[in-house]
Every structure is written in structure tokens, then in C-alpha cells.
Length: 240
Image (cartoon, rainbow, N blue to C red):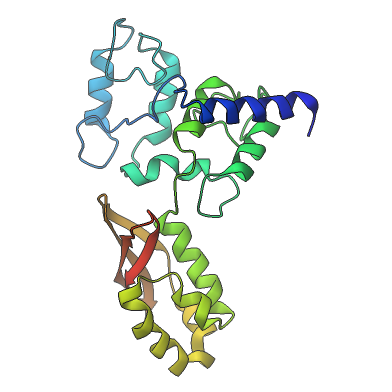
């Protein structure tokens, strides 16, 4: 890492240690809280378009104006389901389930770099800058995401590692699934291959609900998956 990037990382840690709050919170474009960013939310942003003042709906970068930069952020979320847990999923740059030093180091590599598709360019401005740093610091040390827990669980299951597989479950569920996985251990890789896409349904502070889609004899079926937040702030599989 170059001297400039080393300095950036050092400054980041200094700011975090001091409790310094940067720029603005992770943007929430779902103004009407219906869990999807759509035309109704755009209408609220449009009301404040090119307006200036404090705490305007749509002023994601806290510039006291709703402008093209804010529209770019809003467009990023257009027609996507939105909830609190989703805010930081893109900040997990190394996709290990937690936003920590490794992600900050990857972020620092692109600091003030311009271009498309840069890791750390959360507002899709084609520049990794202080706005993106604000998102990164707000998400700092945020824990696991249900989707990542699911993928790690599937990886462990695919290689037949029952002990690792059940570590992704809540304590109350782990032994039940251990017994099942041990009984069908030769078929675990096949089971993983037949698991379809994990689809987000809804989530609150303590539980997250998903469906796993699976095709059977030409028909598509949805099987529920429930995640629970444990006392350490980590998502665990409760049932699937």
C-alpha cells in the first residue's frame, strides 16, 4: 500500500477511535417506508428538487440542496426492496459477513480514484470520495448479513462439514439440524445443488424472512428461511 493510502487508513482509524461522525448517515430513499423504492418515493424527492434548506427529504449528501448528486443516489435504489439490514451490504467489500479492516483497506486502494464500478463507490459517482467514506464509517463493524450467512452455510454443507454447517444456526436449532445432516451426509452436495435463489421477504431488528426458490418437476416452489439476530448481533439460521 502506498504512503498516501496508509495515511488514509490511519486517518480513518483515528476518526473511528474518536467517535467522529462523517458527512451523513447511510441514505434511506424509501421515504414512505413501504419497503420498496418506487415512484411514490420519487414523487417526494421531486417535491424538493433544487430546493435548499435543512433536513430535506432527498438530500442524501447533507449539502442542504436536493440536486443531481442526490438523484444519482436515489436511482441506485430504484425499484429495489429496502430495509435497514440492506444499507451496509455493499460495504462488505471482501464478502466475509462483517465490515472490518480488510474492507477499509480495499476501500483505501480506490481512494480518490475515478472510474466505473470501483469498489467503495457507493453513490455511483465514479469517484471514491468523502461521501463514500461516510457510508463506510457508518457501516463499520456491522455484523453478518443473512444472505452471506446463507452462502457460507451452503459452502460448508457442500463439502459435508456438518460441524461448520450447524455453526450458522441458532443454538436452539443446531442439534436438530446436526442430526438431520449426519443422517443424509452423502447427499449434502446434491442438496446444495438443488437449492435455488434466496429471496428477501421482510426483516425487522431481530428476525429476517426469506424464501428459497426451488424447481421441482417443472414447477417453482418457495421454501421459507428464517434468520434470527443473536445476542452478539450476528444473524443465525433459525429454520429452513
